[in-house]
Image: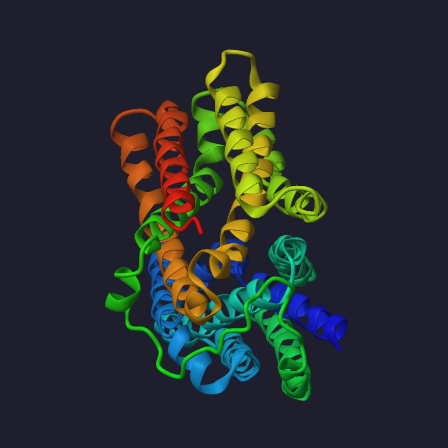
Length: 388
C-alpha cells in the first residue's frame, strides 16, 4: 500500500507539471487568435499565480478538515475542469476566468502533497517527487507541439492534458482509502495534528517561520529569474546566436530535473541541511561561471550548473519542515512557504526585466548573487533558531 500510494503521488506531481509550461508554449498561437497584445500572457500568468497563493494559504485549513487525499483529488478535478475550460475558450476573457480555478487547484495540490510526503516519506522521495514535476513540465510542451505540428488548434492540446487530468482524478478518488493506511516515517514523535488550523498571523509568530519564508522567496526568485532571463543574457551579453540560445534554453531546467533524480540518491548519505548547503554551493559555482570571461560554452554550462544546484534546495527545505516546526504545524508552514514561493516567482523576474532594460542585462549574475546570499543567510539562521 505504501509504495502504491507513492506511485499515485508521483503521478499527481507529473500532472501538476504538465500544464505549468503550456501557456508559454501555446501563447504565440493564442494571442493571435484572440487578437490581443503579446504582453497579455503576463495577465494570465498573474491570475494563475494569485490563485495559487490564495489556495496555498488555505491548505492548512482544508487539509485539516478534509484530509490530504480528498484535497488532492478535488483539487486535481478542479484543475482538470479549468484545463478543459481553456480548451473551449474563444476569447481572452474566458482564458482569464478559467485561470482562476486552475490556480486555486494547483496551489492546493502543491502544498498538501508536499506536506504529506514530508511527514510520511524520506528525503529521497521528496527529491524524486519534484523530479516528477520536471518530467511533467517537459512533457506538456511536447504534447502541445505534437498537436500543433499536426495542424490542429492549440485548444486540442489543452483538451488532451485535461483528459489526462480527468483520468488521474478518477485514480485519486479510487485511492482515497490508501491515504489513511500509510505509516508515519521513522523518527516522527507521533503527535496528533490539532483540529484548529493556524492563521497567517499565528504562523508568522512561530520561531523560524519568517526565515523559511524568506529562504523560499529567494530560492524561487533565483529559479524564476534564471529561467526567464538566461536566454537574453546569453544573446545580448555573451553574444550567443539566437538560434543557439533557443536550442539550449532548456539546459537550466534539464539541470534541475536531472539534479533532483541524482539528489534522491545523495540524500541517503547527507541530511536535508547538508543537501541545501551543497545546492547553494553549486549555484555559486554556476554564477561564477557566468561572471568569468571564459567564452560562450562556459556560460552555457553555467546555467546548467545553476540548475543542478537548485535541484536539492526546494525539496530538501520542504522535507525538513516537520523536523524544524513539528508535524502538527508543518502543513500551515508549508502552505505559507508555497505562497512565498509563488510571490517570488511572480514578482522578482519583472524587477530584473526593468534592470535589464534600463541598465544592463549583464547584471544578471550580480542580481542572482544578492538573492543567493540572502537565501544562505536565512537558511543558516533557520537551522540555528530551530535547533533542538
